[in-house]
Length: 392
Image (tube, rainbow, N blue to C red; front, side):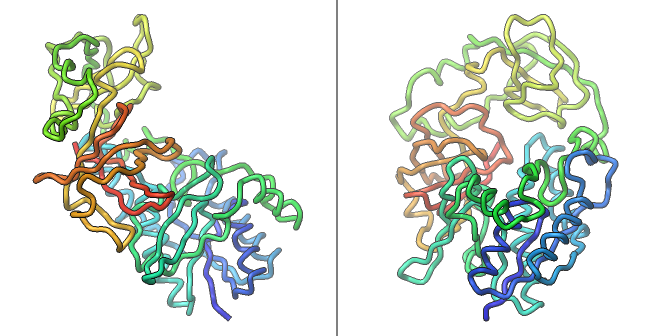
């Protein structure tokens, strides 16, 4: 009998995943990851870890499977939290959920599972794994288009994917809840959790202020008709233009007007609307640029502002990651594929271009809020075959 250690989060998805594994004849062990100790920045009325841990224990008892808690808070701080601080300090926006899967769930947690004699680890992700004819594995989008979580696994390696099981990947969310209700699972009606992986919902400003101190600076509004935006007005057809189109424009204060003050440029992210506290403008304002050196936040009015919408992005060559072993950089050059630059974003059409200083992604339509530090994921026929960190 194959042994599986499942990450029981205390939610309905991992609960049903554990049940399905047991029904399929696996020997199942439930394990809850404790990743966080500091409750001062956790919104305690929204899925605090201790409640989730208790729910996970109750599920294990209902299913009659062994259960234990593993404290990974040290590794989580070193690999996720410290990285988050350094990225925000540099004016980039990290994705802790992607990192948590790469560094914690399918690395430290996987190692702990192997020490228990496990053949596989399992999670409640809405995604699927396939095996190709050559014996390699593919990461495929979940059947439920509204819940597909393959994007969060875009940094997995072949050896991690080989040991992974995703029992609910073929199901839609209503089917998962129906199973949980049918067998009377304690978590059947529990709402979906939000926030950091196995931590819960945090107050990001409070969280960042642990290391990144408030520092007043100007919010400068950039006009929509700035001359620098002219080259963005037509669909590019020549690859020679890609570098220009992918470059983040470096604004200066004299190109716009000061409209408000902020408490620190490192607290903001490209595309952000809430929390700007800009009054007296005729239209909603969005963050279109950050300069942490001068501590300046640049904004533009309206969602269609050309500074917020770009045709292309760049990924440093060393940051290109292959989930699939069936592709390499040479095969990416000129490849047309589907692209996603944030979770829950509908897949976007575009092409990949390998140039001397990076992998460039050229979209068929301009993309809103391309954000340095986030991940771009690439798909062919629903399979996520590669990804990379969006460069400045």
